[in-house]
Amino acid sequence: MQSNKQLLEKIDRFKGELDKRGQILASVYGISQLLNRPANRDKILKSILHESQKIFGFTRCVILLINKEDNKLEAKYCLGYTLEEEERAFAHPLRINTQLCRETIVAKTGRTIYIRDIENETDLTEFDRKMEKFWKRVSTIAVPLKINREIIGVLEGDRRQKMVLSKSDIKLLTSFANQASIILEIARLYYQIAAERNIAENILESAPNGILAIDQYKRIGSINRKAEEIIRMKRQRVLGKPIADIFRHDIVDMFNDSIDNHNTVKYLEVVRDKKDGRTEVYGVSSSRLKSPLNDGAGAIITLQDLTEIKQTEEMLRRVDNLSSLGRMSASIAHEIRNPLASINFNVQLLSKKMVYDQEMQRISNNILEGIDRINMIIKLTLDFSKNVSPSMTYGYINDIIEESITLIDQQLKSQKIEVKRDLCNSIPQLLFDPHQLRNAFVNILLNAAEATPRGGAIRISSRIEQSTMFGGTRSLLLSIKDNGIGIPQENLKKIFDPFFTTKQEGTGLGLSIVHKILEQHNVLIDVKSRESKGTNFCMIFPLKGNGMQHAEI
Image (cartoon, rainbow, N blue to C red; front, side, top):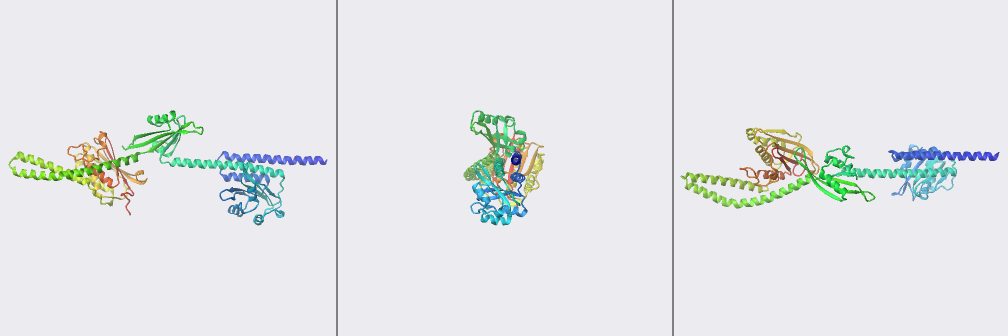
């Protein structure tokens, strides 16, 4: 009879252990499922403590993780604690090397410590006894959290009444702690990978150049924000599409060469026209992507906006040419001036002596008119070569535009040319030389009027926009556009050169002077023209710094 009773008790004990094992397996499975969907670390810690409390009947439980840098044991989540107890647990991490207590011993040795009755326990350290004055625990157990023999923390639970745990219970708790450690480590690695991926994505999205990744099937796998701006298409429209559907043939050929012929890097410059008549220049490069197996995994396409770099290079080239031509012209003008004065004096002297010879008088007058014209050209040349500093003052650029239009109003009316205005009204006061800037605008308007047929139109427009040319600050874009005869492409790069003109009566210095004035005001100028369609003078004024500033109001 006694043996049957013992057998039943053993069966009940085994049944209890099996139930706990089943609970532990179910708990581990439930916690691991949190890794299959977005869940923060606190949620996983809370789930581990909740399950351990449910299975082993803890009143309070806490997870402490090792901070390797500070060599401290820090409370990361607790359950069953009062608000005061929580604040104390989080505010007072344990120093592993200097504070000797149950938790730090477990963290250092990896040994489980179970105390059934703290009040009568003889192996408590002095620090343990100090802590128990606050925690008032009756029974407690602390088990290590391990990953491949490396201790990462401690799981601790206690009861306010005596807690009786068998060796089997302790073994089950240790097993549960090991499984929880694995889940915590997987979660840590997952969030580390996610954080690194987010950093990589942020770097990609913040890159100043367009970047696209193409797979081995020549389909677009990823695209950053700058590339969207350059190709003027949203990523939803291009992801998964063949590259041949998005890019022009020369870029596709370059990419195919990189993939098919295993060329490492290829480079191409592409020119594209904008709707406003300006052109954009892009540097396109491709380089092969390699997989971990060192085979081809596609390629990277990089798009760099070279427009403003090219404009700057062209401006510097033009300034250098103008400077050289100006010095040479001034030298020639000085050499011509002295003998020309002598010729002028002698012609006037001859004219007085042959006052009754009408034919000779006519010839003399023609010579004098020619000398006056040469003198005018010499004066303009010398004025152009002088480095006169502008007299800067604050003012509104729209007023200068209106004054410039008024100065040539009679010529515009005689040709029945309409001036259409689309000027921004929110332009702040700028710093400029009113006389010089008016001279530049009049020159451009006169050129537009002379190129525009009777009854044509000149459109003057302005807007404020961001420009990387001036450090990403706001700039004023001013456009003077006509619908005249246009400028042949072969002449377009020469229009600012001194003495270049296609007019019979022109000196070829008007636009050279315009360029010099705008250069002194730190203004960029670009000219786009199509024969029989018209010409567009685009000027970019910085609204802050470099000679053009906001007025202090």
